[in-house]
Structures are given as C-alpha cells and as structure tokens.
Length: 142
Image 1: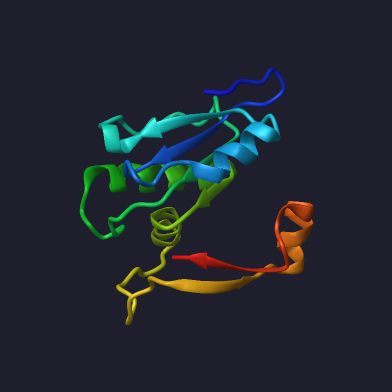
Image 2: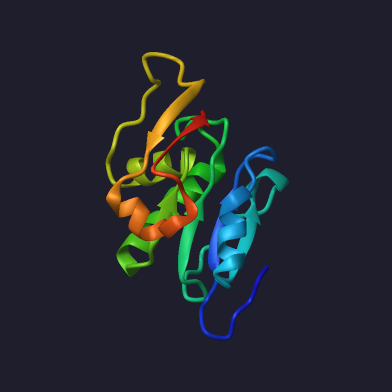
C-alpha cells in the first residue's frame, strides 16, 4: 500500500490473478495517490467500511457479475453504500458490470466475441485528463 498524509487511499479490488492493477498502479504511484489492494482472488473479504478511503476501484475478471459468487453480492452491497455516502466508484470490466447492476442495469452476454485488436480514438475529455500521456489514436487488444 502506498500512503500519503494528505489523502485517504483508494481501495482497489483485484478479482483474478491475471487481472492486476497494471498501468493504473503506475499512474497512481506517479501521481503520489495512495491506494490499497483487496485481493478477492486470494480469498480476502470485501471490507465494509468506507470512512478510511477516498474511493473504490473494481478491476476486471473472467467472471460475469451474474456468476453467483458471494463476493459479487458483497461488492454490490459496498457499491450501494458508497453511492449513498457519495464515495466515488470506478469499474473496469466486471467492475463496470458491478456498478451497472448495482444501479439497476441488466447484464447479459454480448452477441459476439469481443476479442481482438481495436482502434481507440481519445476523446477531448480523456485528452484533458491524460495530457500528453496518450496519442490521439492507437490500437489496443481486448
């Protein structure tokens, strides 16, 4: 865990061994933004408290939010509490599914496989957030 005297840490949830923090960790460290990891993939429990953090980030998984795992219900309950407490929440992959389901969205399988190379166009809003860190357009593997 990185620490800072000025900011409560972000709490980041990792669901699979292959779904680590990656470049997000680099960005947080470069920005001196404190964070702590919760390793669901290692059997850690979902913390219930929100008072000691500045936000929640839910990383990806090869599971669906509809898989029926107990930790999914625990994370949905945490997101509900965070929404009521005005605690920022971000999601990547299953993290986005968790947020959507918590807020009443329906999650279903995509009609086609979403694996392959795709061109990403950086929006003006994303460019404002990332500065010169990203080119205006680039290929990514999903």
